[in-house]
Amino acid sequence: MKTYTINGRQCIDATESMNLYITDIDCQLASRKDHTNCVISRACMKLTGCDVLVYRSRVYVKQTYQDVWVRYVIENTLHTQVIAFDQGGKFNPGQYTLNKPALDKRLGNSSGGQKNTARKTPRKRPIRLTNVRPYGGTWQNVAV
Image 1: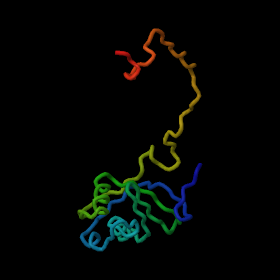
Image 2: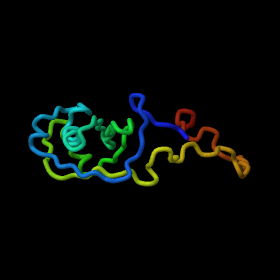
Image 3: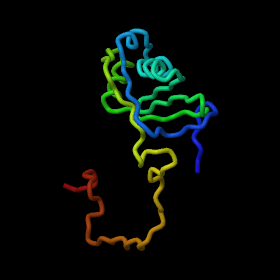
Image 4: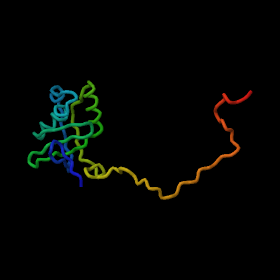
């Protein structure tokens, strides 16, 4: 099985969801387009006391006692808030949830990948047309 790492530390999926409480102070002190000092990372650091990396759809929280990164999935409302904040908008304070990844989105699960390109049925024989105009779309060669 493939091992996923961030900065040399192993990455694992979260087993439970996490509730975040984002305040006005988190929104005022956060910086835009900085995944270590954005609104969500400030709220997570306040809650857990650990390092946090925030991306568009994923949040990685560093657990010091296991020396691993724990991966959470951002819900849709929080996702739009992050994008709006990075583009110069205002982040709405409130309670948000960082979800654990769904079973089909967990680390190590295949996303389908490349399909088998071997043909199971032989190709059909091309149709040969007869009695067709030799210059189907060129009007320059037509005599008037």
